[in-house]
Image (tube, rainbow, N blue to C red):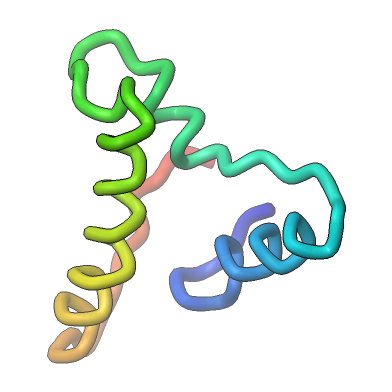
Length: 73
């Protein structure tokens, strides 16, 4: 699934998973499979990434007038 930030790309798969569907979070999959940075290999670190994203990302977006997504497509 692709889309702009804040459009539900993470929310929708979480809701589907709660309703018994198998989903894959590709952001965490990417973090877990990278080779140049060891952070994110453990479940505890991945949980920290999730918490940081939920807590910090809104604070960064709040004052922004423009958001540029540089993620690969």
